[in-house]
Image (cartoon, rainbow, N blue to C red; front, side, top):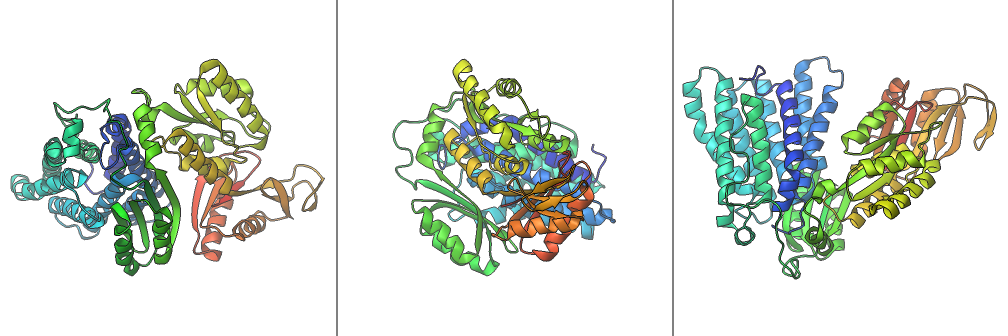
Length: 557
């Protein structure tokens, strides 16, 4: 039996970590099960990205200094739901984000009101299922929705017996979750009976399988036991799934459109109605002014315009199914999501950790210690995959990276592309949108576009007397940099940082990323407060980069 209460912060962290790890391990298997609604082989990847975003949001709250532990717990639950919403990818990922958000919202009330925990968990699963059904334009049985409903019903049915058998809510909660996870696995085995496309392919539903993985992780965290039956039910194939020939998108829309939407809640019914008339697989989740929108359409422009009419769309993603399906058909069995990796040059310990957490092979570099061609070539080969994307993150390293990439292509037969990222923050922006489930060309296109649209700046200290584009400087002066050129010479770190922020936001922007250097934690914190005060409509993300020479790196997207 676990030592922590079922709704406390350590348990939430352990669940977020366990679910992320479990989905990472099952990602290839789930990708291979993906034949509905479009056989594009990315469901496992999308679910992993969704849950890992929720985990990262929780860990960020844990790293902050909050006076009251109770306040930190509530903040962590809120971050868990918001992180899943912000990071949700694909049809099943968006649905799962709604489930996780609804559960987090319900369980947060247990922390405040100390209600009966077993009943609260069951109620949280019911609310999560109801919310997911409501979010889907046309619910289809034999999918993740069916599996969620079976789990919720089992949880409700188990509450009375669990509370009667155990005097402590903790034991009752474990019993309820075990019953829910078992019911989910049984429902998953029945999905081919409910959806003909699954029966024809000889597989269970990919999204439902992903939900089972998440519930199994929760059961392990709460009970200390690993479920005995966590595999795909006997008789169902995992990999490879032979996809039929012909145009699999002929009977449905050609494009997947996704975006985050800042909009008043009252605008959402009209948005749902408009998008429902444009296509299918409609899912709109969220609330309190922030929504995640997913739809399959033929008219991409109309889907985006509907979002503009409702509010302010961000992070718009468009995927052409014909290309993605073709990629899934031709993808080798051993490749799938693990067949592509990123090689990133990192200028500090914190930056190296950030890139590594995103799955990159990290090469240390930066001003004064730029990597050689041999170092980058070794990293490309070390990746152990057939497709590699290189992020040099420094203008002087781009040429070196291109030589390494060409050598790897000629000598090793690898497919390697260099995205000419000029700064560390551009590399962070690029890897944030990296999706192994996309085709290689589409992935490179999205990463390149995101990097190029991230306007970047920095704050540093002059080491010697010089004449700059912003005027003369003396040793010890504070220098503000924009797009590689000196733009401000000053005497105070805060004033120069504020000037760089204002100039970068002068051309518009919705997200400011701050990366603190080895001695820049206080400056980054001050700058975060400045942005929140002077630019309240702009989101701020702060990371510990640990880079030398630059107390602060900045970007605006």
